[in-house]
Every structure is written in structure tokens, then in C-alpha cells.
Image (cartoon, rainbow, N blue to C red; front, side, top):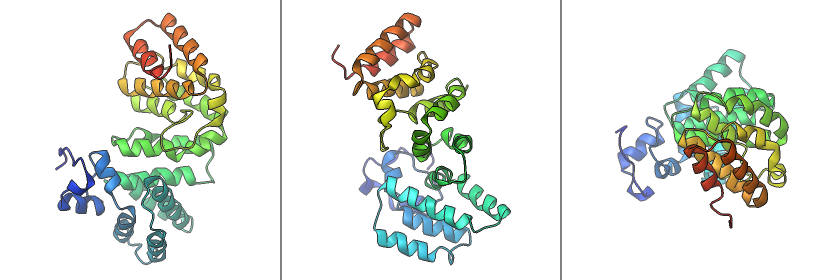
Amino acid sequence: MLLRKGARKGADIPDHIRNLLQSGHIESVNLTEWLAVDHILLFQQIAHDLGMGAETRKITEQLTQMNEQRIMKIIPTIASNWLNLMERMGDKERIRHFRSLAEHRSDSVRCWAAFIIGSDSRLSLNDKLDRTRSFAADHHFGVREIAWMAVREPITAELSNALTFFMDWAIDPDPLIRRFAIESTRPHGVWAKHIQELKENPAIALPLLNHVKSDAHKYVQDSVSNWLNDAGKTNPDWVRQVCESWIQQSDTKHTLRIITRGQRNLSL
């Protein structure tokens, strides 16, 4: 079951797999399964498992009345409700409940935990990024994507601080961490608000990008090239200049792949 390929269409997901996903007993294995999870039903199940069915009954009713299943709407909403519940708990209970979500076998539940961190106004940007690290390095693709989206707004609000913070992450031994540092600062990004400051002046992120201009891992390379592709939509000449400089500094197959993909939508 863990090695299944997963259905290509939501309608083709077997009932027993769908039930296991909905009950939080297994992870999704592809985007189709990930998007098929009903987060409201999953919230109800997890609350019951944690012995919080009574405390969350009104929340479940409100979520149902929203009739909202768009992934980037329902996950932050559920996370916000969990955060409100946890703020009423003592320290030990709050830590225990958060850990239950953060270490849950369901990737969808771990996505909630990532957004709980990003939504916590009591945490500084550095604290949020530090606590997001485990989700940035999660083995599941969905959790890694949600992790950077969860801190996208705090990053945008304190962009200079974020770019400085990520300098160490961009040289981390773990390619998932390096990738997170780049993906979370993309000027356009995917399923996320644009970072206007980077659209207008992408050069402020160049010291960060320079660290990964020759990264050997394709997962990181794709993120760097997508960053350049984003920047090329508003600053094509800057992207051309950066790519020319990079290939002169580092004439490797890794750099060549990055700059080729990064300029794929430019008229050269």
C-alpha cells in the first residue's frame, strides 16, 4: 500500500484508500490523492482521536458551513482554529497537542502544523523559520510545499531579514533546506501572493542565489531556474546578465542547466 503509484484522477481513488486518507492513517502518494483529501472530515477525525471532539464541534460546523475545499483556503483556516484552541491550553498541553499534529502520519495533518507556525503572531520571523525547518525537510512533497507557503507572508513583510536568514540555509548540506530557501522567496511563486519588492528589484536576492548557482541537486536547480524565470517576467535584462555572469564564474553542467531553464521564456 505504501508503494502504490496512486490514481491519476480523483474518481479513480479506491474507496479503501480514500477512507484511509480521510481517517489520517496513510499519506497521499501523489498530487491527485493530496488534493482529494476532505480536510473538514479529516479535522473532525483528528479532533476525535485527540479527545477534543466536544471542543471542536462548533468549529466543524463552521467549517462545513463555509463549504470551502480549496486547499490554500481550508488548510490556513483549520490551522488558525487549531492555534486558537491551543492558546487556551497550558504550556505542556499545548506542546503535546502541537507535537501530535506536527509528527502525525498524515501529510495533510502535518500541513496544518506548518501553517500553525506561520500564523502564530507571537513568534518572530526567525522563530517561525527555525520551527518550520522540519517541515521544509519533510519526506512528503505536499508538506514541503505547504511549509514555504505558510511563512510566505512573514517573509514578504520582513524580506531583508529573511534573505539574510536564508544565507545559511542556501549552503546547508540538505538539498531540501537549500531548496526551501529559494522556493520561499520566488518573486511570483506558485499558489502564493507575489513578492512585489522582488519583482521590482530581484537584485537584492542575488547574494542568496549566488550560493546555489552551481547546485548539484536537480530539486534545487529547478527552484533556482524557476526563480530566474519569475524574475524574467519583469526584469528580463537582469536575468540575462546574471546568467551570463554565472556561466563565466562556473562553467559546469549544473550551472548550464539552471541558466538554460531560467531563460526558457526569454527571447534570446
